[in-house]
Amino acid sequence: ASFELGSKVPMVVRRGGQSLNVEVELSPLPREIPSNLPRPRAELPPAETRPPTGMLPIKLPEDEHECFALIPSNFDPRIAYGVVVWIHAPGGFDEKQIEMQWKAACEQHDLIVLAPKSADASKWLPTEIPFIRKALDQVMRQYPIDATRVVAHGYQAGGAMAYLLGFGHRDVIRGVAAVDAGVPARASVPENDPLERLGFYSAFSEKSKAAAVIQAGIQRLEKLKYPFTVKKMADAKYLSDEEIKELVTWVDSLDRI
Image (cartoon, rainbow, N blue to C red; front, side, top):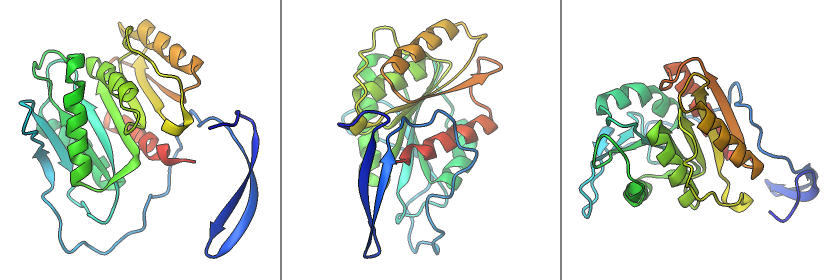
């Protein structure tokens, strides 16, 4: 964190009782999504025991909000899972639809989808961010989690909430993926800190009513040298199955050195 981009830094890599002296050049994280990535783990024999899987309710004793977690059918307690905090657009969501959209990605990429619901289905309030964080903390206590792949993801107003969650909780959030949503105008954007890495993914259409706001937000974050990946879409709608696959590849790429 104390070096500038472009600096060349000596490193010692120790592996298998041997040491290797190398020099690395510091560069920003790439904007491009890799065409494919190796599976993050080796195949394991089936686990002897597994917890319940599928779309499970997450209940906080002190909170009346509804929340669900999609636990993949091949869940293995020996593996660390990424988390996608899926924040819905106004109107709420149907749990079965979320399961249908994300089931394959969760099974293939070792992911858990956490889907909180706003108290009023028609809107989110910034005051509901602490509830989302508490639900995320509960999932992180219950399941083995890969801390490099915890992402706030939302559509339209849910995307704006994803930005707020990411900015305010950089101790756990490593990426923000917003669809047809811009950075809230009044959001307090922290300085980029390499020790609390935060990457961004924005998918939007130039036909969107929010296109100008979205582009202004991207420029605002790029000036602060945040890594930003932009996906241009034909229409202002949520992601297709293929686009979800691409997003999940971006999530998997967050663990790069």
